[in-house]
Length: 247
Image (cartoon, rainbow, N blue to C red; front, top):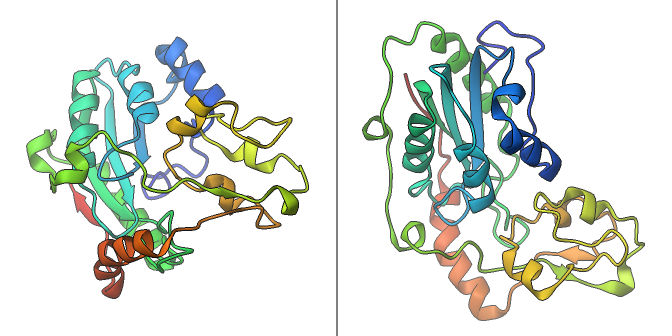
């Protein structure tokens, strides 16, 4: 999107890093210094933006700066996430001029092939084309301008039905899982959760699974849970969903 807007080397704030989120939350004005247009992207988990991401977004200070709001979901549904992001950014003092709903490979794609390989070349081309339209956006958007699908999942406080499975015998203790965890829940010394509270905080994003080369961490579900996930994810994975943009 930034490339489509004419920026080949945009400043990047990787908010998946706990350190970056802490820096942004400590002084968002300094973190955004020099950024004239902020493209905000966040994943959708269970129809919502993760609480930790919401916390970081709420700390931002827009001061009238223009921004673009993007959510990425794994084909099942985007739920209330677009509305959540629009409301947060508007309250932060941003002028939201564009919004998009893009597709990513689902966190549970090891079990159900949902969104495999997304975003792909076509998605990237659409993102660049979308970026080219942002600069000439005619108006500011509100939460009412973006689609939403408010269901039981998006209303609930639940963020995950699955936690990553850990097989210590396969573990090489390379600590890549601890580095990959966006919420710093895994000990770099033991490669286990720091505590039971940390395990409860896990939203099942499976970043640790994707970064484990020995499959010591994996996505597993019992037969009943796998049936539930199949019923939930398979309809969305049958037909290709395309990005939706609002300008």
